[in-house]
Length: 167
Length: 160
Image (tube, rainbow over all chains, first blue to last red; front, top):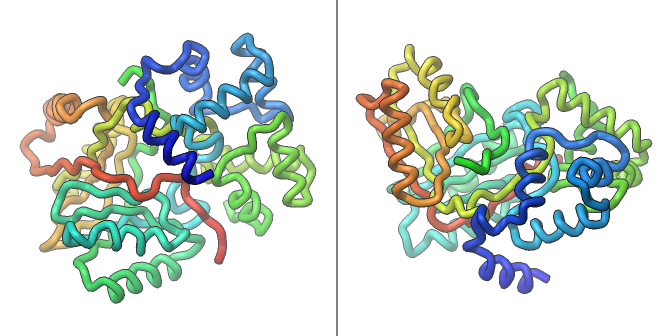
């Protein structure tokens, strides 16, 4: 399954907005912010878009398999349901992959990206409490010895509210 | 809002997304030994109380062709940071704008914005326009384009 997924991921890496069907585009423009809270949300969407429920489920499955749709679900306000922080590490290029794997061994890591900077590994840690975050940060400091920035959120001015497809 | 044990369980159950079945809330309700209506009501409540910022389709920008993703960091004087943060957050192509503590001498930047675009150049163009329109062009900033994505998914709040 994983191998299949990564093959699909490779083949579809260059999907662009123009590759979306008209219905997919309408769906993504309409349902990033709000989602029907009725017992049958996919049937509601089907009515709205003039499709059948089965077709909506097929479309969402296809968007997921093409890796365009991450999920239908919540985006949490930072530091309300738990604690989070942004961490940056300065890692020698030849060790980056191994350190990224070590970082990913923690389930508390959600986003983990290489960035082109002296601080070249950036990841978000989210946990139910502050102590757990501190434990992970000091474990990573001690295990690797690389320079590390712990950058907790102080103030959010704008949170990802969905992405307009016309940007 | 103080979250109950059930809220935490519900958050764990929905954080990776709703199942793609005709009655997705009922399926979650089954796992949690709750009624379908209770699941729906609690999600609505988390939304109303702003624990959930939005609920819906979460897309991967990269797979939509927005392959250039830059974290732009700014060094803005403390007394101007709030005003600057609000202005930066108003641009369509800025998906996030947060203030974080400086870590001197290693890291002088306190405002973090995420800008997505279809190419390196389009992000740089957008950034220049944003810097001029917000009046922040004179402050020092850095652009950190993304390279490999080692993990990309929603937050996990599960209690270990």
